[in-house]
Image (cartoon, rainbow, N blue to C red; front, top):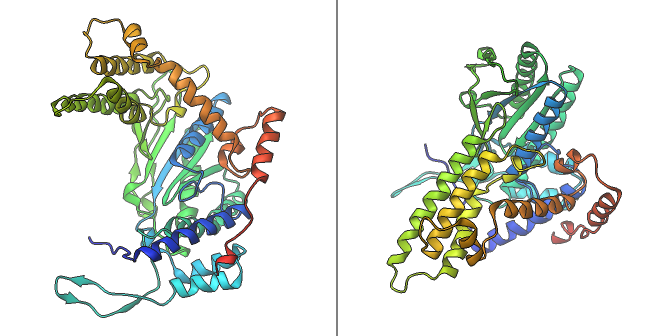
Length: 410
C-alpha cells in the first residue's frame, strides 16, 4: 500500500511552520484544545500520557479499585480528515475570518495526481486528508479531534459511565476503574460503542484489529479477568495479556516495570558493546570522548521515561541492580580498567556520579518542568497538593506569555 506525501518547496515549508506555531499558540491560549489530547502539541509528550495513566492507576489502588484500559487506533487518521469540517472547527476556535478563509483556500478544492515511472494520472480534487509530512498536520489533527472529545465527554456523562479518555494523536485510550471486573467490562463495552459510532460521524473508523485490553491489579493472588467481547462492533474477543506495550513503553499488571528495565537496558548494553568498535579508529578515542558518548548515547536509552518508576517509596532494588551493572560495564570500557576493579573508585576517577544520584537530579529537573506548564495541562491537573509559593510561581509563569500574533500574519 502506497500513501501520498506532501512535497513542497523550502519557502512554503518555512511558512507552514510559522503558521503552525502561531495557530497552536492561539488555540492553546484560548483553552480550545481538549486536555485529554496529548499529541501534536508543544509542552505535551508521550511521557505525559504515561504519567497520567500511572497516576490514575495508583489513585485507584489506594481506593481498592482495579483499573482497566482499552487501547484503540484510528484507521488512516491523517488521510481521513474532512476539509470542510476542519474549516468549521477553525472558525469555532475563535480565529478571525481572514485566517479561516486562508485555510479554506489552503485545504478545500486541492488537486493531486499520481506519477508512476513515465505514467501521469489526471488531476482530481481531494476533499480529505492532511499531509502527514506537513508542519500543519499535528495541530490540525489535534483540532479535528477537539469537538469529538468534548461531545464524547458529554455523551458519557449523560449515560453516567465513569471513564477517562486519553489521546495521543490517533492513539486513544479508555480508562475505567471499579472493584468489580464485570462492571469494568460493561463500562468499556458501552464507551467503546459510543466512541465508535461518534467517530463514524466524524468520518473516522477504528482499526479493530489493533484494539487491546489490559488490567492493572496489585493483588498477590492469581488474577485472570474474563475476555472482553467486542464482536458486535466488528472487533474481536480481547483476552488480556500479562504485559502491554503502550506508546513504546512496557506495562505489567503490578507496575513493577521489570520487562521495561530489561528491554531498554539490553539496548543500552548493546550500545556500549558497539562503541568498543571505535578503538579501530586511526587515532582511537580518549576517555573524555568515551565519557561524552556514554552520557549522550547510552544514558538517554537506559533512563527513557524514568519518571514512571522512579518516585517516592517505589521498590527500586531490581532497577538499581541492573542500572549499576550497566554503568560499571560502561566505566570499565571508558578507562580500560580490569573487570575486578572497584566500581566506586573507577567512577570517581572518571567523574561519573552514581546512577541513583543521577536519577534524583533528573527527577528534580522534571519537577521544575512541571511547574512551568500551562494551567490547562493534564499534569497540572494531577498535582493537587502544591505549596502556596509553587502555585504563585506557576501563575506568574503562565501569565507571562507573548501576545497573539497569528492574525497579524495575514
